[in-house]
Length: 149
Image 1: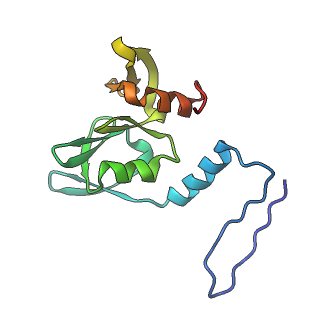
Image 2: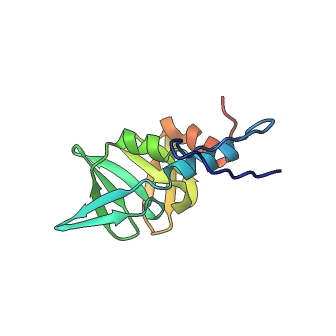
């Protein structure tokens, strides 16, 4: 593999060009994570406004027209819609697990099956999150357990 870095002209925007025989999902995810790496989240807790690092978020949950970012032990309100967060962070290890929740796969310790095709995600902070039947397949695909249909 050859890497070439060039400086753009003063009136040109920075850009990345990849030439490869067949880009795999890992390469595409890596490139999209670079694009999203500068995404800043602002969290609100009581009278505090805090800059949040998305990598520390365990999950996002929508509740009563508000969206919350759950950390290990804190919960912050964020001013995004759930679908916006899903679009923003899907190239990384975030995946929809129900109509009202997006979970960070890096924070899942293990999964266990539930009745009627659901899964329960046991998170590293001790919380449990239910993966609804509708989203089990997409989670398994992202984990590499199942093939894309």
